Image (cartoon, rainbow, N blue to C red; front, side, top):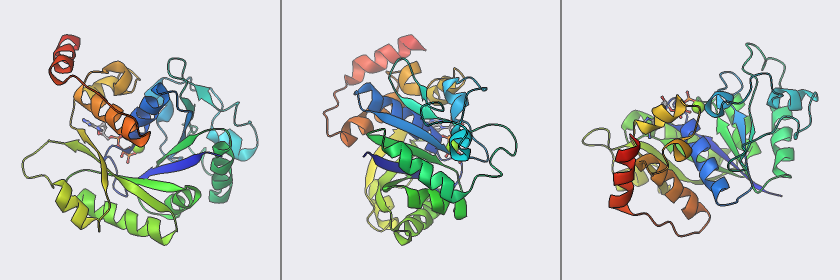
Length: 254
Ligand SMILES: Nc1ncnc2c1ncn2[C@@H]1O[C@H](COP(=O)(O)OP(=O)(O)OP(=O)(O)O)[C@@H](O)[C@H]1O
Ligand SMILES: [Mg+2]
């Protein structure tokens, strides 16, 4: 039985999906058996980030009993990463109950080392059900107060639901002067550890427009290196990088 990790934030647009797709890819590059599950049934977008054919079977089909887990799993050829997207059709989520979704996530865990669930924003019932279904939650936030306030609420909710908080990933760092420091974040979030920091990098949206995670599209970019460092740390492995040489390669790639 694997471990399930949900990536949640409360606030929208902080970088959850980017963190999920890049961390998932970087873990798979280490040979780790990872399945990413779309936890955003209302406005799903996982398929788009990987260029998955839109007619493929989805999480919605598994939950309704119309497809097996394998039938709705897309295997990324280059890395072996497994992905279960949700249907992008309007109203496709209407008849999916939270309980069915929880059961499905639990079943997927039987087939994989780590299940990563990309959560929808907000802190409503749907999010509570997804957080409850996971073993641990990773909180994604930006180094600014409004995002931090929602991260704090997400941590409180997660603990209240009995799910362990694995730590905080702070994304889009270095965008402006005076952003919150690790110590300030640690204090604001009642001692929750910052486990990763991902810098602001225009390679991230550039990679998305190519339907690829940045760790594959621009493997030497600052953001890709930060995601690879986080993946290595999660697996307890060393990550070596060659600062100047990587920056030089990065410049050649642009
Ligand atoms: N490190 C980064 N550098 C630059 N842009 C980034 C970075 N991380 C994310 N972004 C951009 O920020 C936007 C939001 O990212 P993303 O979709 O991952 O957030 P989200 O938390 O999943 O949003 P939602 O709540 O809508 O699901 C996207 O346009 C993405 O390209
Ligand atoms: Mg998202």
